[in-house]
Image (cartoon, rainbow, N blue to C red; front, side, top):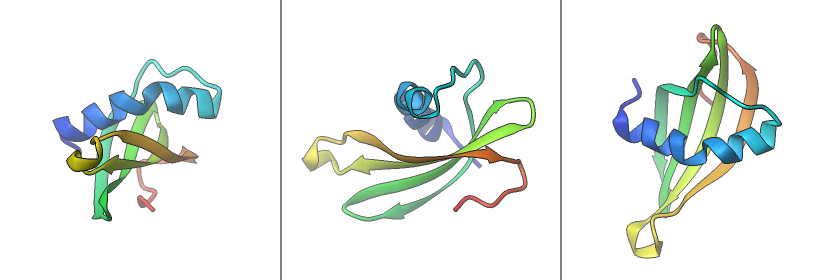
Amino acid sequence: MANKVTQKICDGVKKDVEVKTARNYVNFEAIAYRSQVVQGTNYFIKVNVGGSDYIHLRVWKKLPCDGGEIILSSVQEGKTLDDPIE
């Protein structure tokens, strides 16, 4: 289940997602996520973008000693609530 930290990460990359997908999102709510620690943290996040439309994000958060920057790595469109986060 997503939390406030995950939503804050999503909010931080929303504009990058909109540029990458050439869409504007009114709804952008983190629903679920998983993470992987790798010289920072990779976040794989399921985001509801309105109704039954979902996207999956891969976001890398650098370590605090490296600036803690949040970088959008990839976006998968056309997902559903039941699709596993990969």
